[in-house]
Image (cartoon, rainbow, N blue to C red; front, side, top):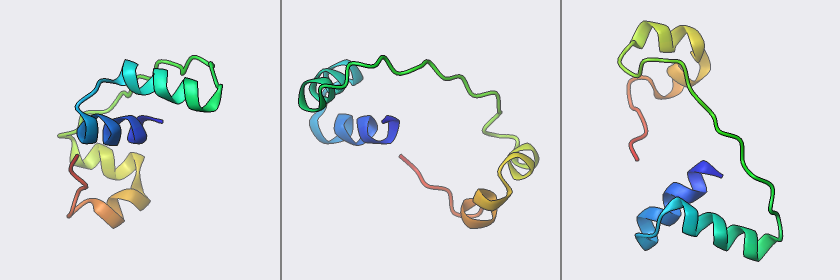
Length: 66
């Protein structure tokens, strides 16, 4: 849902809460999404290579920007 909300925000200028309200209204899904925390340093290339080898092989030299 995170990628969809980011795209929605960029396209409409509305925030995550407005996205989620619309999502809930259209789907009837009122499950509260869990809070997620990530424990990596985006500048630690060696650590990222170890944690995500397949993604690093594919995107490490050409990261996706959002």
